[in-house]
Image (cartoon, rainbow, N blue to C red; front, side, top):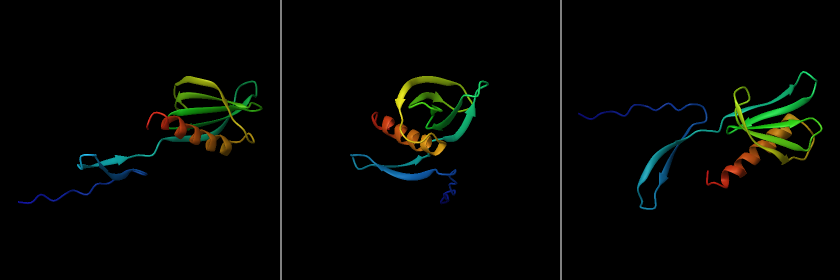
Length: 115
């Protein structure tokens, strides 16, 4: 009796790919997009405003009037581990500018480690 393959349903953004080893062996793998949160505009009790954006578990915080971005590891609403507080950013202070910067920075940073 031949067993029929069950259909595979992938989540949003998940892709099936075929990875080929140097030996010629192939294997099916699944890739998922990095998690994205924001950008979100926040303010503290003193009225100090900032834009925050999360990409690939890096959290970027850009305080109004600053030319530096703080980078942490974590999520917007969850715990964060501070990593760097001196990453330079240019452009007009806005959520879309921070999102563009954060995604490019994270991809470049992860690329240094072969990710």
